[in-house]
Image (cartoon, rainbow, N blue to C red):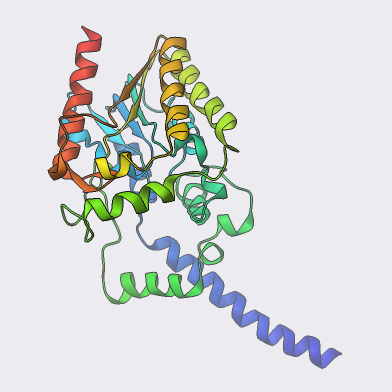
Length: 305
């Protein structure tokens, strides 16, 4: 028995040491979450407009085109509960904050990161925003949250191949490497729409409460909150579930009526966006982002007059 325990200890100790070293090395690799947390800290005295949401707003709303100093705090797969948590964290750290722009997409009310295939991203909020998004051990560790092969690839890419892992600009906005995805907009439209159509309404009630919390947080801090349903290409729009889309658009309209500090822009079918503005059926490219950002900026200016 003693020999077994001894052999076990000899085996476990090196594994633990390797895991600790890997954890340290992985946390030293730059990433968009750490970068944005650092950048908004540098800009906190100047930021007047905060952009929140998923990849739709990450790629689709560019702070460069706003009159007031803006920062994009969106991330891939970021859900509305995380938008609320981030706003709640930064609202008292941004003394000049006047406006919050948040995406209200086809998927917004029917999803939460914790119950998605990308739940592993919760560790980025815990580790690099210092938030308490999840108390699960695996989401408080780089090593435990991803598969070994993925972490080994990250280590190789950064430490051996000298690849830059940062995909966003200093303003928090991200741009696709090419103006258009490999597959056609027509081909992708059906695929993406079906992927985004929820199997049930389990999260709707809770997520509506989150958007109300955001509205109330804005109201209590004298902030204007603009919920935006971003433009989508026709091949995506035509394959959406009508009821799911109605739930989202109705929620936006009700918010606008219920809260004086809230506005809802439903630009899903906006006619001034064409094929050249889209990277794929539900994401704008740099050209589309410029057009949308200018539109929202003009809306803010006109609303203040």
